[in-house]
Length: 193
Image (cartoon, rainbow, N blue to C red; front, side, top):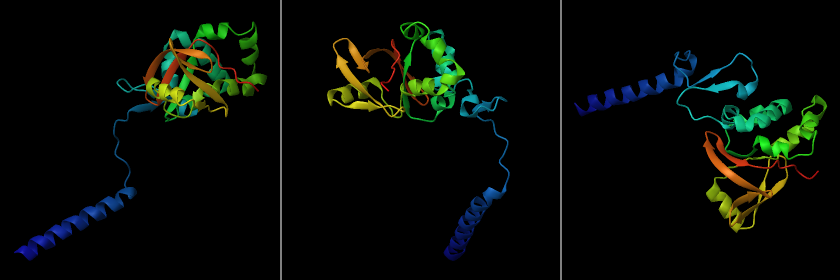
């Protein structure tokens, strides 16, 4: 009797193994997915969040009026897909008033198609390809480390009495998103060329 039960058990395991190995030949079942792709076909940035799903950096920026100038700049530079990357990434996001602090005409000049590369370089200087919540930024500051940015440049992180500073500008607020962190800042981090 034990021999028959063992035989049936082995056959059942073998059958499961064969079925699971042949699963690649079957068409996937039509299941409800968490994301929908818009017909624009603009890459990862065309994927929209479904209700209940945590939004990514770009989706949060687009949803808040404080980042209208940033979103326009991101779209003009064509770096939308970088902000929806699976990450983790940390974005130091300047608010609209940060762009207003730049010399008059700077934003308009950077938004011109012929300056797309320069604008993209400035924007990726706001993205660290790593996970930096405030707690981690404090540790980096304590160790005297600089943050490596997607532009290839480094930014100094400091822990001062009134908060954390990156690249000389204070972090005003932090938001956890699906692909990392957004730290709201009041200045544009223009890299030295």
